[in-house]
Image 1 (cartoon, one colour):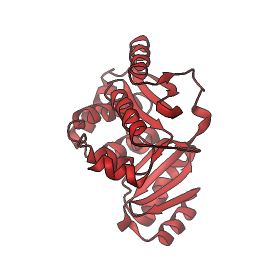
Image 2 (cartoon, rainbow, N blue to C red):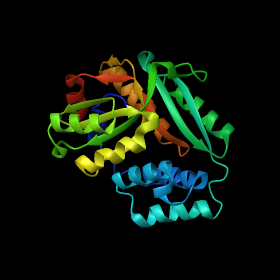
Image 3 (cartoon, helix red, strand yellow):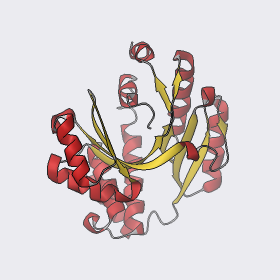
Image 4 (cartoon, one colour):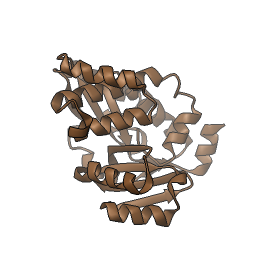
Length: 248
């Protein structure tokens, strides 16, 4: 899930991380299997697989789970997975992109539509909200990677487009087609990143009050609980005051 930069903290403070651990491992494993099936099973020769493995490792997925996911691709599993994007609106008109990977398009479409409806949202047509986002590569580093100037210089040399540094760490943005190259060059300068992945970056965000934030989070939670859903992105943000209430 990606929304406001503080979303990771909200999610953590809600105490859902441990409960969702096995589901997260399953989603990451599925991406590894599909990436390996679509290309070479060697991460060094398959950029998508390399990024999928990196994302799994950054989420503490054990090596044996990663290895099994790659072996599944060679055993013919993952053949029928189809990547689908759904778009819609949540409370207060917040735009939402849902990325799914499914072996049954009808089941997934029905579940996603039902989830939107049950939580006050509306599923739209393909393209109805995607124009409000940019597809970007995102590489994240902890504060310990260096100060803002050092990270900025490394990012420029790596061919990145922008850097956002805050008390939460460093976020490096690049063109979606250059993520693998930029990530590799950054690691030469700054060491291993916390994460490197393709994301939908909102062009603008909608600030929500407490009530709408709670409604939206319930919708997002329900979408992410679906086994077919890989990622959910929304163009919202919350104030420090609402953050404090959510954390209480």
